[in-house]
Length: 479
Image (tube, rainbow, N blue to C red; front, side):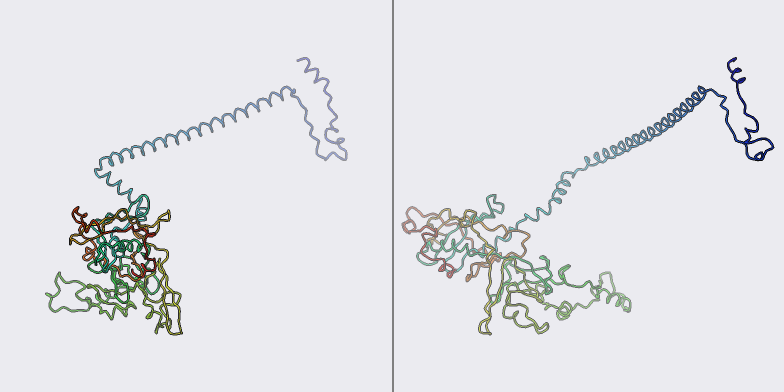
């Protein structure tokens, strides 16, 4: 205390006029005084105050951090609790649905159908048409005095080693003495390399594809529609739903006419308008001429349905002539067909060559679609496994044989529409009518009886191509 008093005693106070910037009453007496601070607090006190301020700042920061952490923790806890509650609710829903599914008696059938639907594209891609067997048999079996009858046919459409196969137990008959003639079987074997198939799409005059379900290609007996002079054709159900791809979306005029009729017609005899009366009773059915004018095609009637005939076989002479309406031909020398309903083949190409400025020679080519192609090793697609003499049900001498024939898978593919098996050039195929194709089949020939000297001693020959004396050109001409 004495030290502090001592300091105050020794404290020197400047003159008052110096404190105020000049002498009192002088020239500068009106100027503002200069303020000077006098530090009466020791330095230790200043350090103490700074420390308190820093402590308060740290406490404040800690409080803010604690509050923030608490808020964040509460948020996390609420989210976690909400998630757990959501998961629990969903699990309860799943358990309830699972219990309901397990109580469904037809669950296995439903799952099977669902699995099949997911694979429907693959199933369709691999689908094969067993019904094409008859058409192939009609092209494969020869006609004439030399004929072959099948006593047993095994069709394998899922051959793991290659394409579909026919395993036939058959008998060859020359028709004339001697009935047992190796040439019949050998010609049958060689004809396999000349068999072709064809597929594609029918199109309208604007080259729009006609759906396959809108095409009739067989008659009531299942025989392919064919004109003996002009070739193959089909009928187009032009009035079917979705069958006319080029038709414009028009309002149904018949319904409008009927509505107008019903609104304006006065029925004197109410008995005529009964519950059995339908809209069709008041609509006049259009004639074939009306339909032809409306559609732009020549409409005709077939089996009670209005159809348009479409030629599958090009009508070269008629189509190459100028179209009087369009002033251009339906078919040019490059084989291009337009402005007329026709068949777009995926296998056959056409071309024409003009001779002497008068005659057109047309050529048909089908090199890629072999019905019985060679196997991967380069061998033939038909294999004669065995042959022997025998007698048929009429006691005629025949050559019994067993053969395995491998066909191109494309010929049975479901996606290849309008497939048609074609016989070798120059040979008419057997009708593929369901009622007449039975003539291809016959009762199995019996083995030669041990006492049947004629049957046992009649010679046969190997059917390999190397031992046959006939040339391929001769066989092609024969078939």
